[in-house]
Length: 262
Image (cartoon, rainbow, N blue to C red; front, side, top):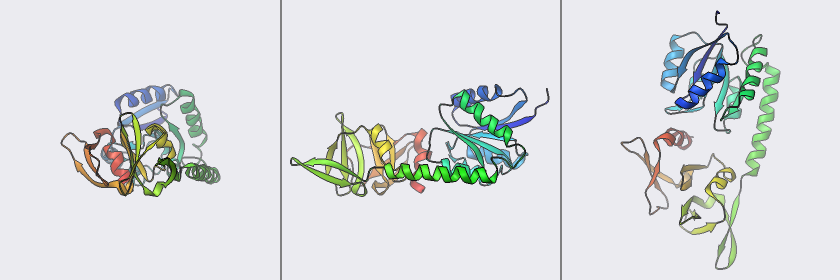
């Protein structure tokens, strides 16, 4: 059967790519996956040498950057469905004419709905019509504003038997020590907090805080230096300094660089 739909997959995790390819092939017998790309560099090269596909399914954070770099330069005539573990890029994604934004792990029924959106949009420019695009952006911006309003502005800590509010702007980082989570202020004071780091990730604005590793969440002003390691990791120097050495894994290094760069 002749292929009716040319599709490109952009995903840097082999297991996720394999699963995505299987799910995509089940959508329609007329689908041909014409390329599977695992980096910004490889995708840039492919799109510069090949005609735009009908549809692109793409992760956002890749090992050497994020896929927005690709779509801002190439593939303007292709519909895009983003498949990612991160929800903070939704507004930017829709501004790039994406037709859907699916969070991992992908659910077959959600991918099917996204595929139907793609089919309905074939008569127009890739993605929804302009009116629907504007409505979606307005909705997403409202959701984002609500989410930003939900981020904590201060934490209550105990000092000499009294409760003391610490503004988020004064916090350098949170770290774990002996099964406790500690807050360290920018002037070096430390306090215990009754939150797990996993909970704090949802309470802190990701524009200003980054989960460096399993033991530490740091604010932007607390990152003094980052050094490349031979194994692809990054060694981080914090301000105030922490007694333990702090590393960002090779898998998270690119995401950290993107966050630090802004």
